Each structure stands twice: as C-alpha cells, then as structure tokens.
Length: 67
Length: 226
Image 1 (cartoon, helix red, strand yellow):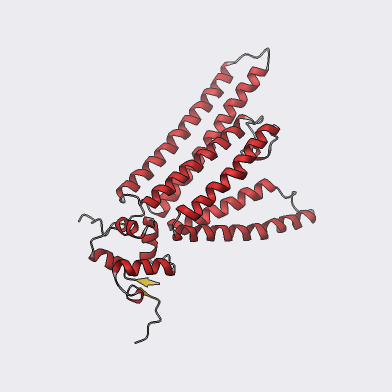
Image 2 (cartoon, rainbow over the protein chains, first blue to last red; image 1 turned 45 degrees about the horizontal axis):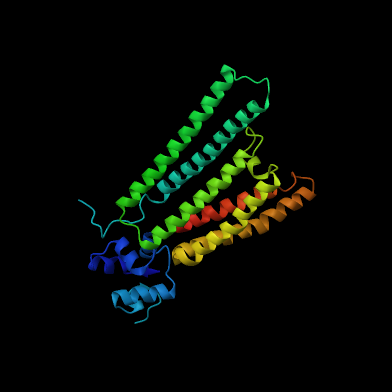
C-alpha cells in the first residue's frame, strides 16, 4: 500500500528513528511501512493519523480511491 | 552531498550485509562450541588415561583448537562490532528496540549456557555438531536442561512476543512460524512415508527439529529486515 509517511516525516524534519520513538515501534517498522514492505494494522494506522493530525486516507492509499 | 537525518535509512547495514554478519556470528558460535568440545574431550580422555602423556602432536592439536576457538571469537566479535557501528550510525534505537535487545542478550546467554553444558557433557567431540543434540546425558543434566528449555525459554519467548516486539516484528515472527509449521507438517510425513517404503533412512527427530527452527528463523529474519 502506498503512503505519504516519508513526506510527512520530512515536513516535520523527523528521522525514521524520531518517528519510531513517537509511534513506539522499531526503526525497521517505520522503514518497512514507508517503503511499502509492511502495511500497518488499523490501530497503528490510527496512531500515525493522530500523530500527523490527518485522516488515514490522506496518509495511506490503497489504490481504490474514488473521486 | 551529506545525507540528512531525515533522509537516512534507519535500518543500518541493509539486508544482505546484515544477513552475512549474522551468518558469520552463527558460524563463529558453532566453531566456538565445536572447538571447545574438542579441547574438553581431548583433555578428558587424557586425564582418564593413567599412562597418558601429551605428545607434541597432542599439544599441536590442542593449540590448533585453541587458536581456532580464539579466531572464531574474534570473527564473531568483529561482526558484532560492525553491526553495532552501523546501528549507531543509523540513529539511536528506540526504547522498544532496547528492550528487544535486552531480551535477545538474555536469550543468547541462555543458549550459550545450554550449549556449554552440552559441550562439557559430550563424549565424542570429533563427531557431527548435531551429535551434541542427541547423545546421551546424565539424568541430572537432562532435567536441568529440560527445565531451562521447557520453562525459561517459553517464558522469555512469550514475554518477547507479547510485551517487547512491535507489530511488524510480530508479523514477521508469525510468518516464520507459519512457514515452519507447514514445512514440518509436510516434510516429516513425507520422510516417514519414504522411510516406510525403504527408500531413505529412518526419520531423525533432531534433524527435523533443527530444520523447522532454521526455517522459522530464516523467514522471520527475511520478513523483518528485507
């Protein structure tokens, strides 16, 4: 699943390690989500959305979005 | 141009280099156990022979084994140091990663204790390392090891799985366990059936256990670090 995590993180000048601390996950987990190798669970997706103060669908794109 | 902390990949060495170093550490650990076993077995045999004297050849073998053990320790230490350096360069580990590391150190120490006990109570050091896993043990040693493996290991594993790892690592672990259990469910009966047909040697429980554990570990590692 595509996502804007790297862009959102860069806008705040956070490293992967900074984001990992804020989400209470490992640096590998942040890297795996960013690179699309791992899709986060719903609880983690909500946690990410709250952290960036955005709706989930503005961070993650499952390719099914309709206009 | 310097890479900023924001752009830096926080996974350290990368999958291939990390896999290489871990393989080196595993081989070094096997080498240390094998070399130590050879030395202990050699000295035990020597001490039990009332007329025994150490010839120059015996001393050369012992010195060679000692050098081999030292070489393995050095190689393993270099690999660990290189991993640590890459990890530090990739940014500070999170508190959850630190807890994970602590559990892995405890698990490593537990494994080292079990390995050393097996080596020190093993009579045939020159045979296959797999012989360490199925040669006879005294009842007391067997009970102590069974308690370590049967009580401490699952307690540590459950704590690690339920309290320490994040969901990405838990998913990687689940994937490894799933592949391994299916490899066991398929591999063991296939071997058993072929044995019944007189085509292969009798199923070896230790080999099946080791293969299952290796498959689970390799898949977990790939899923977590790829």
